[in-house]
Image (cartoon, rainbow, N blue to C red; front, side):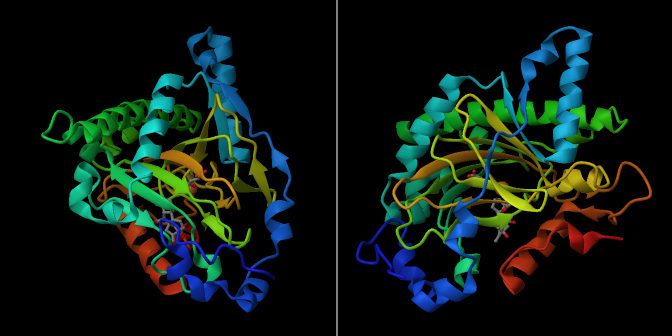
Length: 345
Ligand SMILES: C=C1C[C@]23C[C@@]1(O)CC[C@H]2[C@@]12CC[C@H](O)[C@@](C)(C(=O)O1)[C@H]2[C@@H]3C(=O)O
Ligand SMILES: O=C(O)CCC(=O)C(=O)O
Ligand SMILES: [Fe+2]
């Protein structure tokens, strides 16, 4: 196989840093074939119109049932009329692109990025082979950092970014809470648990950029994983590349510019005793085009104990701190996350 693109020096410097992963033998033997990554069916995720929640009792109930069904059967769905205006999403994308376009040296240097200091990630520091590498960069920002800096002594550029990030995070957070309450209600719980435990101090907004990857289509943009939260709200651009497991097969998600993607995370699967599914997903790279997405992660405080809301529990109860520590240990030790199976009774 010919390896292209080794001559350029892209930002971030994946080629140089991970060059040992890119020899022919490595690519040929240790990963699945390109066919497995690309020749997957494209699907339309269940599409739910949240406007129905503002209509009569019948429409409202129908909408709640659709949310419950999609969370049980897919663990993933799309929503339209979700309450986050196109204007907010477009402005967010514009500022996000601008932030990623800063030179690599500026992105890694804490003091040049004001409030985003320390939130920049790229590649996979723990990777020991190609299958563990994520060909992407991200700013992973706790919500309280965003709002805490509003009106602060930062420059006008970071003020524009922090103000749009705050709008985006607040509205995505409201949406995540609304959906969590519906899903809790469907399990027979009128629960304030999520509002009490998932506060801005513990939730994250993550801006992702997937640069074009000229090395091989077998390099992941984001390696297969489940999310370690209750619920994720995702906005992706028109490029495509997100894939998820459905009925033991990988399928790719067709981008819908009007929709947000919702997925159930590990904590909701544990809380619902396996009723709602935290489904494995990944992002595949594109040889020519860069891709952007933004994700809101609804997480509780580290001390929050997650336990099944019905019995007999299939997972033992655990604190979010315990869960995160275990995930990090496993990533360090095995190069990937093990997640909920570790906590089976
Ligand atoms: C190496 C890993 C860290 C990660 C889980 C994974 O096995 C693969 C993707 C990573 C990711 C990306 C999105 C989220 O930030 C995250 C919390 C998640 O759920 O998957 C992280 C994981 C992590 O840091 O725990
Ligand atoms: O970029 C995407 O489409 C998915 C991102 C994702 O899975 C994540 O950030 O956890
Ligand atoms: Fe994810």
